[in-house]
Length: 234
Image (cartoon, rainbow, N blue to C red):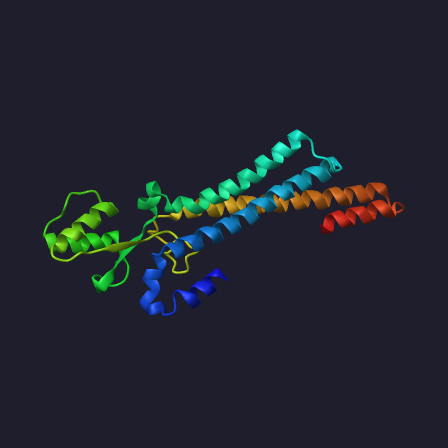
């Protein structure tokens, strides 16, 4: 929905405003919101499924009145869920990580065509200066060298970050060769896979426990069988 609204009101002509959109604050904000929402949903489902499996396994009836300790544990779990999701969302935009997540730059006035990555920058810089420059290949150095190429004109390049790299301003789950953020993306995908596996295992425990309970109770105890079926459907 947010992508559709942004396309309607901000990015009306993709050909002319694509790079302006992918380098904007709104693009990064959209990426943060979508990532926080998806990760909180997954972490919450994982936490709830584990708690449900433990409760069914131990046959502990949930108490209506939570103790002080239980409340503190619940607050800590909710805080950790939200906090970890927020950290994952904003990590690619932190200044200390910008060098790792920025893949390319774009320039106004058609100075360079399209997105220009580091290797293309240094090809242009080497061709201009006529020699191999022994400098650090970071984005700040690239910006200084490009600025020195145009003494009489002001050259401003905009960095395309993690969320703008795919054009949709969403979390970049599709890893490409040469993608600087591939280890971060791979780690998040692995974490999500672990969460899905935990959810599947937890619900397997719930189903197995209720089946065993029904088998022990026998067919005569209809109330217990009905309760177990209700637990399975929740």
